[in-house]
Image 1 (cartoon, helix red, strand yellow):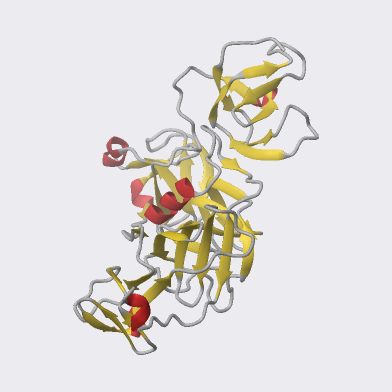
Image 2 (cartoon, rainbow, N blue to C red):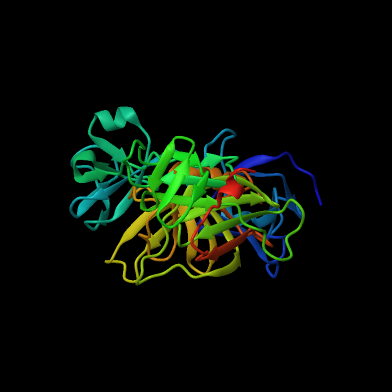
Length: 356
């Protein structure tokens, strides 16, 4: 193998699989999307050999699927500085940010698009679609994501307020002194049980390695706990499947960790969302991911996935192993993070537990 200087290269196809080693029979370990920029560390057998492979951090891809770019070029699809908006009507995507520019594609009314953050362009009345092209700002209804942020290093019994009242603001949280079916008590007094959701520290699943990271999703309480071994390190509210499209229960493993992912309904006309962020798929199409289109965390609202606020989804994505190699759009963990999804018993906190 001839050594070469490392160089930057961009994916030249809509989807490029990263394989474990330079062999077409090797297993896939990751995904690049068109425009993703990675560092080629070497080539096998050499960069000018027929059928050469580009050797990347963590895997290999056929060199012909990449093209060299200047050092410092930013990746296209791994950019996380995005805003989202819904097409108010059927609209035309233009080649440049000006009326009358060539139309490069059409978008149906109701589609949700992802846009690059560009305040100067926005001041001119235009938005640039993340994957290319421009649309008039007046044709888009921009999303306003939830401000919810979860609680790092929470106590073993933590309540989130989902209905403001009795002196508590929505999304306020407090350590639970005691709780029954009627009320929850904090250091500042009592609040009706129906106003809160409770995260209780849970025992680890069977076979967990010491210090292994894992997640617990409680369908009854609509909450998530992140654990390192037996220690609860993060807690927050989620939204899971509605009654007619429930989230499946069981013990699963994350099989896909993707920066963002296009999601559509059973029929494309039903709903279509570009670049859903921070996706951790763990059971077929069911995934934990960020949701920018609602602020109803603490209630079941989804088609089966587990929705998190953007801030919480970002935290969870960064915390979940393995780390995503620079420039990759997605990684296929083996084995992935364990995810326990259950409708846990009604959270009751006796005073003796809270006193510990």
